[in-house]
Amino acid sequence: MRNGMVYAATLVAGAALLAGCDKATSIPQEARGDGEGTIELAEYPDRPYWGDTHLHTDNSIDAFGFGVRLGPEEALRFASGEEVTSTTGVKARLARPLDFLVIADHSDGLGATRRLYDAPRLLIRDATLRRWHDMMHESPQQSQRAVAELITAAANGTLPDGLTEDPEAQAEATRDIWTTQLETLDRYNRPGKFTALAGFEWTLMPDGNNLHRVVMFRDGSNRTRQVVPYASIDTRVEQLWDYMDAYAKKTGGQVLAIPHNSNVSNGLMFELTMPDGGAMTAEYARRRARAEPIVEITQIKGDSETHPLLSPNDEFASFGVAGWELGNLPLTQRATPEMAGGSYIREALKRGLSIEEQLGVNPYAFGVVGSTDSHTSLATGDEDNFFGKHTGNEPAIKNRSLASQNLGTREGRFGWHYLAGGYAAAWARGNTRAEIFDAFQRREVYATTGPRMVVRLFGGFDFTESDWTGDWVRAGYKRGVPMGGTLKDKGKVPVFLISALKDPDGANLDRVQMVKGWVDASGELHERVYDVVWSDMNKRARRSGKVPAVGDTVDRSTATYTNSIGAAELRSVWRDPDYRQGQRAFYYLRVLEIPTPRWTLYDAVRFGIKLPADAMADAVAQERAYSSPIWLKQKKHK
Image (cartoon, rainbow, N blue to C red):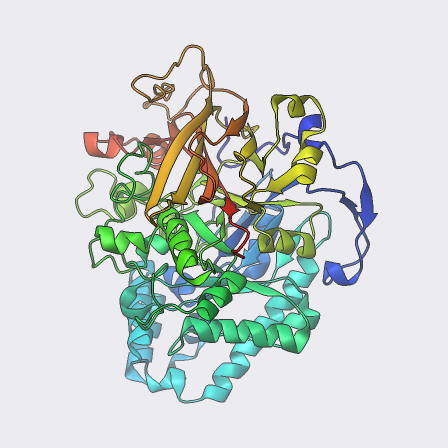
């Protein structure tokens, strides 16, 4: 099983996984962005490259205020496998490093809290700014309160004049920070070994409703230095897309946006209308689909796949939902079925089919990734290595579970509902900026809640069991489409090649499920979850249409488990039993591990806490992976 601080450096890479990847080509200089040398590219995407597209450093206005003192360089060193010392003095290193990283510091007030913190007190004339300066120097708790006040003031447009009276100085400071960060990214970008991608977080949050996007660039600093991060205050999402279009036109580069954390958007992330409430236009739908091909489905602040209110027949729909019933970022408004419909991914995919029926364009034809949204500069998404949402939750904080998360009771405790994070996996031909970005662009990516399962999905019309005995990866690309792709209805039943391998350092697999959403001839939307293949199928025969639970080997007293149940590999050729000609649909995989301890149980053991019944119920979970969908469309639809 995984070891919290140091991981094994191996990755499952069997002959079957690498099949069809024997040919190679040299990568052109321009495609690499900045960096020296050339690498060999496989003929087809040969493995999943692991990364985090949503990490904050001390340049984020909230992260610095919450206490982090590690910058972009430390974040890149940690993600690429070097040892760093965390803000609270903990030595941290990943023996199994990530393959790529996007540092996504908030564009609004980039570096502002650090500049306020470092400013000589005698030169701070504004009383509010001076009070915030003093609070940040007083204690971590007071610093957090100061930043909470600052963020609220920014959202309300009531920032003190000292932060807004000199726009030119603000812009110059932003450009200096951005340019320095881009130079750092280029130094750590090593084609074939580690990819450092430029990005930022655009933080639109009307009335506390989270409409944030991570903006991710394909290019090196020769292009990205020609712009600065786009601030969100007093803007609309269409203006962000304008900024992205202008960047591409000015530089010849490429950029995309990743909506994230939709579970706290108060139903606004995936609306059926325009943002102003008017009828959605085909042009708006087309722009959104082009600008935002990927969304973030899971992260520290909960899981956004689906909700029991939306999927009452899905026995696994409640993962990462508890504690986020208040459906906006300040947690002030309770979720309703109407609100949840615009806040969760599966329902958004269904809504996309409905909109496409009316407009001929699907604005929500997106792939999915996971990421951390960590504000510690440390991109770790594992339960037994959880560094917290921010530095006030790091392992060095004595009794962090009692003081910060208050694990003893749900009543009034903050943080128990955090997940340990998530990761993005990109199927690519090599580890470069161009290859990773292009995998996102074509949606050949998937999400996990932290483990590194290897998940592959191909859709076609003539796959058979005999394909497993040959070069099945080549067959998948030649006779079908990978995850993120589109099948045109041929009047034949869609058939899928499905493969899942366990994380080599993690838990065995329980099952692989296919999630299908479709619109029928009358325009009504449907969804269904199919158990496709599972461990010990002979012993775990369906009962009343359901697969029995896999079991539970977790020892609650030691926060350990064994792989005596489950399977190391699951694969299947699956035919849609509910296909109807003319049906428009999407299909994605959900892969479940056997039960394993959550970070709350690891903390309970670490700090010697006896968890009460309500907390113990949250102490074990089945981590999972989500593939990007494959769509089945009619020839008339794009």
